[in-house]
Length: 294
Length: 266
Image (cartoon, rainbow over all chains, first blue to last red):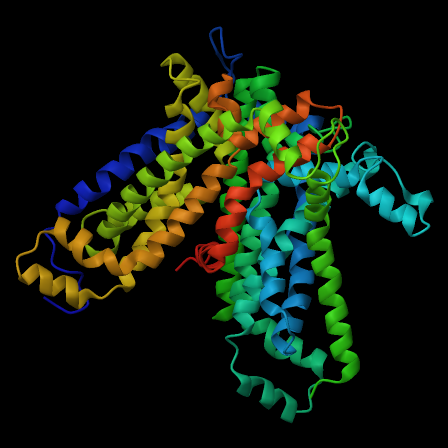
């Protein structure tokens, strides 16, 4: 028996250890996703007999204006959930890594806090911030910017960015802490070498820091992009997709079509599409990061 | 090395961001603990009023039962499956492992709709099982990944010595490998607890009766019904968020490590 081999357990017993977990997993996750694919090929209202429609529900995602809009909104949310936090997170992490600031522990506790608060609570809090008589307008009034005050979630042009800012708010801490962990592993010699070459702080950041945290950036993007695509609780509690359909997103459409409009086939097709998009994006991001390193 | 100006600028940037991070939290805390806009109460009295009027006692009880079940079952199942993947070799190992990994990224939206209709035809909708078991399935995917990573890195020599002494694989798992695995198990427990406590979509779809409503679901309903003021809603929010936040403040290391390392696939 070679050392690299796992302890020489009788191999078949492994299946017994896997069985309970796999049984629950298969019954409540694998089987339902298979059923989702099946349902997505039917026109079904949940009560009467379904009608086979082939790929029509998928084609509708491309042709139906409401559904196209929902996926478009998800793309906008990606900017707020992933790109914004990445840029801000890089700056924060670079500062925290570079300068020996006091209160690092407190800062980390605070910026990571949004990650552990239930999204429903986050949504209730931000609804209050954005309300016509809410704290954001009060703050703007105190700064003499009364002309900017408005009902942030009620106006067509502002509702989606307002929801997006909430995403920026709760993802930035996660991204910053993740990047900081990566940056703290960069050997000091790299910085010293760069400085000997006469690199300034900005050059140093782009030549040393950024390439070294490539892996962390990939992880951060994967997590935040998936979170953006899966936005549901936040929209459900703050806007219900409104005003009009200004903030409708794929996950909300799944729920709305299945339980509001009784279009189960369409809901299933959106869910399956969302799953495929999430897998493709996380696969793509990780591949991109791997290729960069090699 | 760092100029005074740069140092000041750094503190300004960090303070501005900390203020941004705290702004909504302070908004809700000050509303929850300030004078009430719908009654004579203030401070902790608001929490008591919300507890009474919003029936958060019932919701917290359901959340506690569901969370306890999901945490215990999924941690035990994950330890067992992680043990198999991390220390044994068998046919179909990688295929099965990738199958489990699908569940880590799977959006619950995609499975919740077919589950609802299948459980409805089985007469299981609006039961404890309909809320709990789908969440066990979602948690077991991550848990298997997490425990496998731990067992792969664990000390093989001790397990091998125990095996030569004639210990069964069952005894090796629970008496030899698991005691030193406590930090990994604690992290997993806390993460699953947090995910289950905060979950919204699955209870929203699976539950209709009030007695099964979990805390976030109860809060969302309370928001829909209670529109006359904000104090009680804020107080309810504080009640719902507090259990996880307390765990976070005391065991922060576990949360940060779990959420960061769990994301780094090997």
